[in-house]
Image (spheres, each protein chain N blue to C red):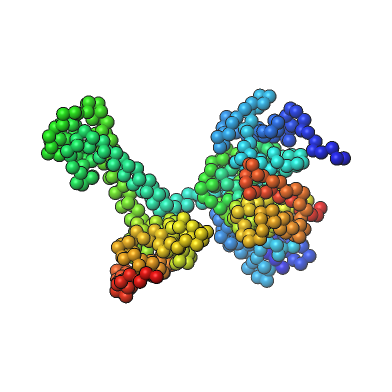
Length: 335
Length: 242
């Protein structure tokens, strides 16, 4: 015996394909109620009518409509009008599903990481243009702090004011009023891009700290976020072999290695971490391999929501880094 | 015989009351007048607005232009209930809707389209709001139990375009579960999505064809889409029985 059900009815059928009992949904078919039922079925659970019938026929096997186990029978299928309601409900369910995607931190992280990359790139080109541009008119001005230089241009209503701010002589050749205004506006937007970049990275750090607490504690939130995005999500990062985590971001060098037999890359994005970038060349690969392993462990803790790593765990990893550096103080002899 | 390929006659060819073939371009009568779905061109034929079916954006459209048979054979009957797996952003789906349902679903068709990506579904839900009979489903094409209740009976036409490993398995199980005997199944196969260590793409396509035959389907045609969509082939499969 089988207990068939879809979203609006349930039926018990015997071995010969005869319906033994049928129970149809007699409630008011509102869109909302149908959405609830479709959601129930999508999560693999039977509807209320099916559960009630199952109490009466406990020996019958529960099968959703279309299960290959079911025999042929005259199922109490929905009428065209009911099907129209179900279609509207399915649309509603799809809209809700699409909305739920906004709560996915992986997708939010991706926009934050890529967005801040784009903003940083454009900020840097704007900043260097401004410094060249203002330097053309004021050859004597010196650039110490680049951000302060940009602010000084942005705050000077006239070229003379800038000369005063920089404590230099007013040069003989000066831009026209209109031209200086474009320079000043360029400086203003450069300075505002700087501020926006700071805020964006702050938001990025906050999200990475909550989404990837262990990895963030280990390698910092910015690098953690980048690894997560490159791996296409936290769940996938946790499942990657640590050898892949080690060279995430060095795909070009890696495939060049596979193709031509050139030396393999030893580190991808994790090179950003000072443990690697500030270590002598000959231990970087060893530290990268160890650190990638630790990142994999941390990512698994985050993805399966275990107890996040604290400062103590990170200190232990740092001791390992120190030990590797100690063990290889001298570069290996050249062969 | 031996006359070679028959030359297509000049002038429009009507594949259905809403789909027309003008020389080498396909057009469908717009179900939502005045609106282009993906930036395609709009044009009036005998007073009715039509949307150009871009074969480089739609594998179904490409298949209809590349087939050696009557392109109308690839389409379902107007007013049928059909299943579309891997609906994407709805390029093909919109034209299929024009054919299947017409303006405000005057033919009474149903088009259930499944896709896994929320981003794609967003575009589809916008389309569906203006098109009764278009049913978008956010779900995995492999998990039939989750959304199968939306198809009370088996369908006469099924299209699959999922670019992921195991496309053939997904297609065969979907045909098994949803396609009625004698129904038409279309599989757009992307060679690069399959794990293949054998030699060459043509060998891969041949092995896929063999698998389709082995599972009791009749392979009516294998349409080469090169030029519109590289490394893709459209398998036109008829389910045995009935």
